[in-house]
Image 1 (cartoon, rainbow, N blue to C red):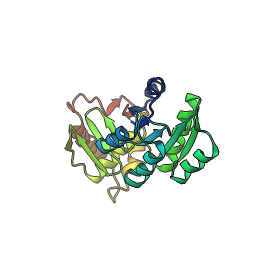
Image 2: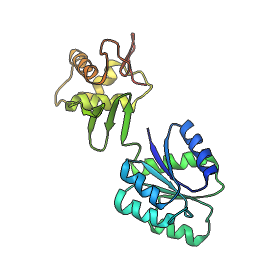
Image 3: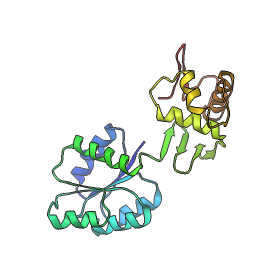
Image 4: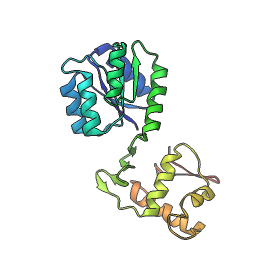
Length: 222
């Protein structure tokens, strides 16, 4: 799930935007000023920051500068300050987009997705129940403990993640993973690797809730 930090001191905007983005599948945390924003960035990883210029303490330009220097995250300015100076200053500081208020929520979501796509920051930590996959570090954990996946197991898990909600046939899975093993992966080998992966990610491998079997068609991760 894409995690967004909303830095905004207008409580009404925070409430409405948080509700809208959450319904759209984003995870949102808010901060009203510079101090709270930096504290939040130090505490957890985010994928994008929505940032106002006028804050309860400090200002958006200083926060943007800190984000680009220390955290390397995409930033979208979301502000009523639509004058040319503010816009140019924001972009000079490395802002990835600039959206003046009032804005249309659906357009904002589209712009967020576009920035994430352009920056390659499309959610580095993905959750599947108690399992977390960090696609930047190339690691997978369950309840905070490393799953120690082999290269082929990790690749198989990524294939499922990148096709969530889609039923994948065994042939599709074979096509996606055979080159990782450095040799041809046959149907029996695929069965073994799905079994091993389930043993690591599922609470009850005999009754999987993450990697589900779709009878006669293949497998699906929701």
